[in-house]
Length: 130
Image 1: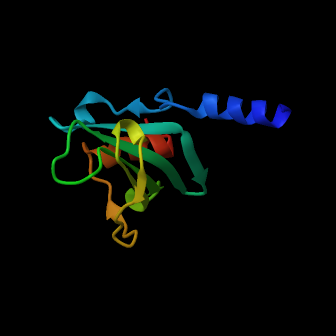
Image 2: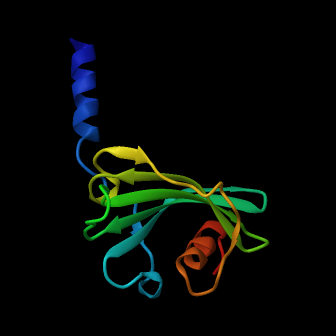
């Protein structure tokens, strides 16, 4: 009986979306219109000159595909100002909820971090730049 109560409590605590950890990027880094970009500061991991974090893209609506949000795990080279995508997970509902599906990755190729774009904001957060 204790095991059943414990499992029921875990299900109750894990039910429903949790939005508190996602922080919206500053307004100047947000694309206009149909999506909002977030990152999770609790997932930042630094190792030497590299850092990783999770980004969430929440779509207002999407008529072209079956997903409404997706998470991207990105790795940043803090010294050389470059980024690559390690993993993408698409979700059928908003804010990373619903049915997850593995997304497409371009072999994790490194790209330069350009100023005044989304990856620049994430690079600053991941690498501790001000």
